[in-house]
Image 1 (cartoon, rainbow, N blue to C red):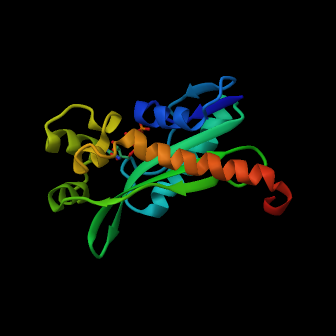
Image 2: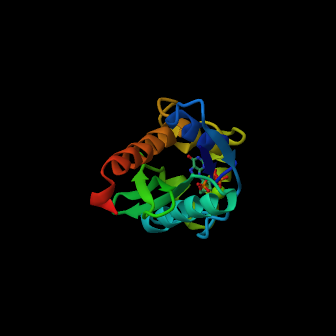
Length: 175
Ligand SMILES: O=P(O)(O)OP(=O)(O)OP(=O)(O)OC[C@H]1O[C@@H](n2cnc3c(O)ncnc32)[C@H](O)[C@@H]1O
Ligand SMILES: [Mg+2]
């Protein structure tokens, strides 16, 4: 079985590998356009980015399953939340969608996002580290390492794969 991941980010690739613990799987990661802003600014836009990555990965990689993972932010009355979404695409059914953990971003980070900066570079600057987005992620920084970006995305990919297995077993109900 060939699984195509729509990103070259190791935090995302490792999450997908964690969710498919089988020997007969080939993982291929390709950079596909998310089709949304580089910094998605709502759940809606982040979900669309995840779906676009999954369907494009499936097509371009000519695989059995395409997986798209997308990070974004979402405005609420409490402030700007970090949000993460994932999609799993296979031929013949609507993409399967799942959301990840979320947390409130500090005002200083939110202000910079609203001024047009991307979260990746903001986090490197804020934490005085390099490549936070490919390592612990914003979620790792703000939880003191209790949950890193790979673990957060593994939860999302488990939700995707679990739903996929369920649908496979109940195919006629969900066509
Ligand atoms: O290579 P890709 O797959 O694009 O991975 P990415 O790290 O850029 O991640 P996304 O495009 O999914 O996220 C959109 C933007 O938000 C940033 N971002 C999202 N979550 C983050 C996190 O936990 N830590 C740091 N930056 C994050 C990311 O760097 C992008 O600028
Ligand atoms: Mg990106």
